[in-house]
View 1: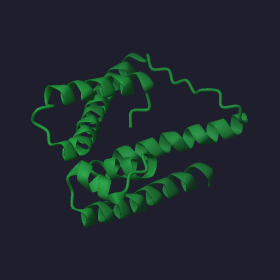
View 2: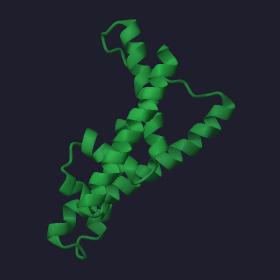
View 3: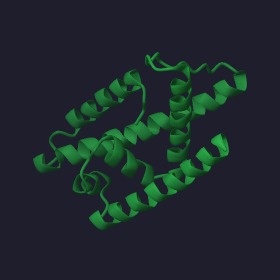
View 4: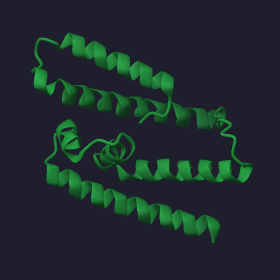
Length: 150
């Protein structure tokens, strides 16, 4: 969710610290869903903090994006970077819980039942929200694609 190994490691550590602090209050069968929920919320908090810092940095003109060398052609790298940027923007426009559902299903490859448990949503709601989120992403990315390459 964060796209930053260092931030992910911090969130993971904080999540396990919270698990340790709540170890006596949790039922064993609920530990995994509790961990995922706490980690998800910590990631969202981290992204909010990053967004605030990014807007301050933008005003100061100090943000520099660097892309890793993937060994592909410059055109391919540029197209992939543009698509990833557009996808990230489209995901941000989805809002919650749609964004989390898409990330959990499409990126993390969770099963519908696991998503339902993690987000504490009925299974059918997860399926409907995922369908709507995919439709919104296709529309959003399709409009971007037509606009950028027309």
